[in-house]
Length: 155
Image 1: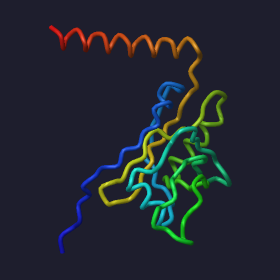
Image 2 (image 1 turned 90 degrees about the horizontal axis):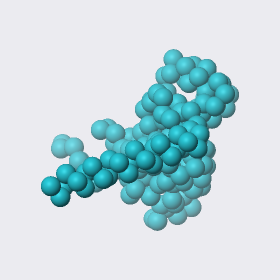
Image 3 (image 1 turned 60 degrees about the horizontal axis):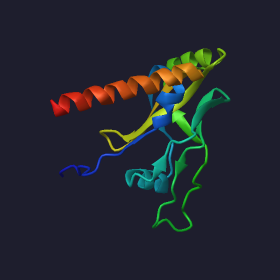
Image 4 (image 1 turned 120 degrees about the vertical axis):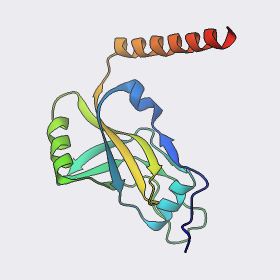
């Protein structure tokens, strides 16, 4: 039997994360989902805006992640903003728990994608919040990159 290949790749990003936070260390985690949730994610109907991760009873959970209800899901449909458990190794969980206890550090989701085996994966990052002047520096760097790209395109 031939494997079915996905014609459309799913790559949902949290664009605000790199602007609001300095990303220090990244991890790729699996997500525990229901049937209608994975179908909505495959249709790219999810959002990582205002999401964050927290530890509850030694397990890592992603909160406030919006996955739209599946159009064809009847009474089996899921709640759009429910908490979802993340799957990491014990060593990674211990390291993240220890690092996130430091003041100013948090865990933020940066990207949601479908892996090679058809499973949903979430890239999370240990992050430190930026101050106002750090954000201005980021804006300035992005504008400089854009101007350089325009100068090379014209010339």
